[in-house]
Image 1 (spheres, rainbow, N blue to C red):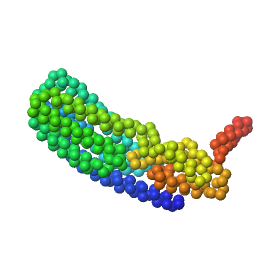
Image 2 (image 1 turned 180 degrees about the vertical axis):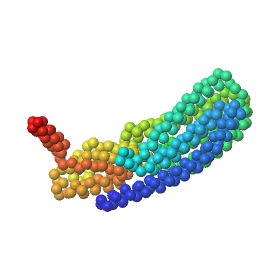
Image 3 (image 1 turned 90 degrees about the vertical axis):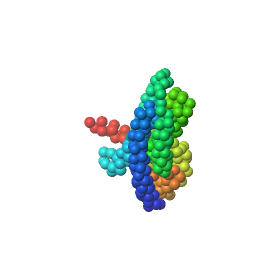
Length: 321
């Protein structure tokens, strides 16, 4: 049973690196697409005097930053663990996701302020130019979404990049509609209105990313794991009397760790603690997908006994002095 567990751990590690390689390729392709189009949108927005296009280009800039940061984080995460950094640099990915969310929020706020100025003093906008450039932007975003789609459920980092592309695609749709409204009806207010709508979308998506990243950094229990259910399942294992100090947390996307103390009864003489440990490992792996486990097996009355002995020893030592 123990050997089986080791095999699980090994295959999981291999799967993790394979997925990381695929995700790196996805990011590189999307980064190349986004960088190329961002320049076009900035120039176009400047020439057409369109805030919606500039907002979209600003968002595209954050996309490029997000993708570059995500790639850097993946490269850092590959670095081996050291005695000083026992988990290596795996958390860099979460820091990158957090930084992404923060920059998205900042960009949204800048666009809000600029849009307010435009509402007060509308400016002429070259609607047709806006439509054409935004349509090109939409095509690039859809391509990026398609490339990143496969990795978005495995990695918070990839999901951050995917969200950037999604809100950007919606932003391009908005810019097209805004350009159409200006060109067809002469509604100059449509341009800042669209930029506000884009910013609201960006705020919404980045808030979720921010919340998840912070949860990981605060060592919160992962959303898909029910701690009560984990405790209940552990209690069902034969020989287990009590479970305490139970923690499940995320090291990086797709890598959860668990630690806990398990009290075993007197019946354990008939059932070796090694067997109980093997059963716990297999059950936690199969039912909850938990691989990185640290379980402390304790005999009944272990804590009180340990602390009492320690206190007595300290007292004797003081008396001897």
